[in-house]
Length: 140
Image 1 (cartoon, rainbow, N blue to C red):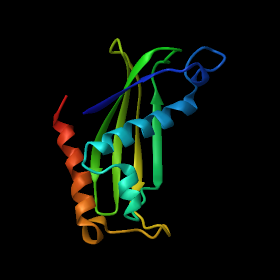
Image 2: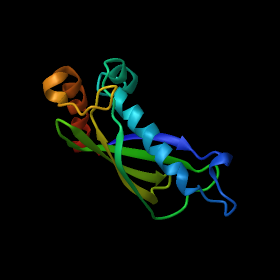
Image 3: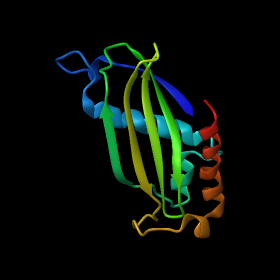
Image 4: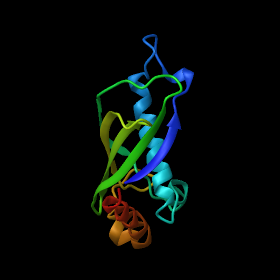
């Protein structure tokens, strides 16, 4: 599983002193975009090739709250890759190993007019780069 580290900023906590629930999805995005770089093609490069990955579905289960200046790891896994969509899974883990949240996002493959694409057929080289991300699935 791919991991990237984030330190909780003051602006991310609420009046109860824990990270506000709305911050987890941006953290998922940070993890996903960093993960993408390992494929050989960044998110930006995919978009420059007129392929977009709009969000179709998202979910987050909150288990325990992170606090200001906690170091947290965002673990990302490409759970499923189809020709028209993909699913990423996430774990948010505090530096001490405590699991704080889990979640997933589902993304479609579209052109700039949001017309669905068969990515394997239309852009096999981009599909191959994304498929490379599955090599992390067997790593711990």
